[in-house]
Image 1 (cartoon, rainbow, N blue to C red):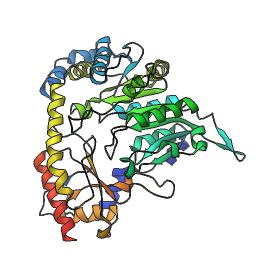
Image 2 (spheres, rainbow, N blue to C red):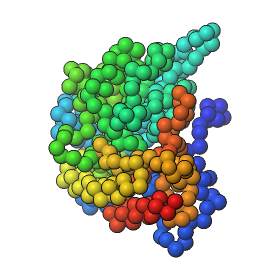
Image 3 (cartoon, rainbow, N blue to C red):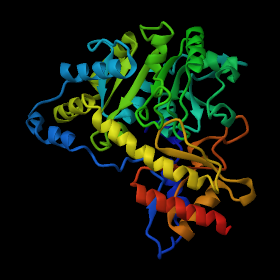
Image 4 (cartoon, rainbow, N blue to C red):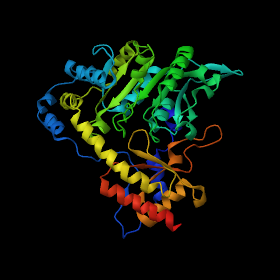
Amino acid sequence: MNPLLAKLQPYPFERLKQLFQSITPNPALKPISLGIGEPKHATPEFIKTALTSSLAGLASYPATLGEPKLRESFTKWLHKRYGIDVNPVTQVLPINGSREALFAFTQVIVNPQQTTVENGVSQPPIVLCHNPFYQIYEGAALLAGAEPYYANSDPARNFGVDWQSVPTSVWQRTQMIFVCSPGNPAGAVMPLSEWKVLFELSDQYGFVIASDECYSEIYFRDDVPPPLGGLEAAAKLGRKDFKNIVSFTSLSKRSNVPGMRSGFVAGDADIMKMFALYRTYHGSAMSPVVQTASIAAWNDENHVIENRALYRDKFKQVTPLLAEVLEVSLPDAGFYLWAKIPTKLRLSDTEFAAALLAQYNVTVLPGSYLARESQGVNPGEQFIRMALVAGNTECLEAAQRIVSFVKSL
């Protein structure tokens, strides 16, 4: 058995299950979960039709590279969304959702044999990520033989990371960095100035940037540009070859098809060549049926605009309500609210979540479960993450219960 499996930590939802195992939720109230970020808006009918009308594709093995029309739909969307030119032959690949691709990509990039000697001790390579973080980043790093380094997010920087505060000794061992913008859980979007710093560090130390952009199409304002993408930032800074950066984009949240498992990666052609080689053996080609439905989804923006409007309306109603009792504001993007529990309540994030379930039958995720202690602190402590993925009525009901809960304390 692979000994690296022993390094994996319990997944946040497993920890939540353990936290709640002795709790009996208030039976007088219908359960409402804001815990899991699974889109609940309706899947567009035209995507379902495209899927069911292409069932003949089940008779054929899919190609790892995907059909040319699929790759062209990726590059056309990238040009329309970000104004960038990407080669459909050498710079894009289909993936079965971001999750599997983020994990697989790490196995391609990390070289566990490239160690660094510090004080006479051989140290493994580092995979760096912001903290709190999407748990796949940590698991992928550990199983690739790397050591995760958690760069704490800073509320004073819109929950961004001060990349220049990361020690030189860490950068020297870093082979790869995960960036999530818009972020999970805080919804922060990295500005061009931060991308510039990150690219300069990449040039200096040679690490690869994996840009997780699965929340890019859920944003709330039209008076500012939509969330900046990693490849877009590279192009704006004159890096049109996308050296050492690969972006990960998914249909799950954009098009409300989390069960379809469809997305794509795009970026540095040299890296993509190696990733394609890995995927040939990894056996993760996208079903021809899903390819057809994906082409339909990427070629249509009307359903994305409608979906975004639903989230905007929901967040417009829920955020000010919760702001009456929690420290929370409208994020840049995404479908989470990242709220701080007021100190005066004298409750930890886990105590808050447990009591809320017991008294009001609402599930939220303790922020500490999404982070690790780093530099002496867990930056997720005293926060809760709320996924506003259900309909307006249910999310408003949950918010009203949370307000009542806090006011009762």
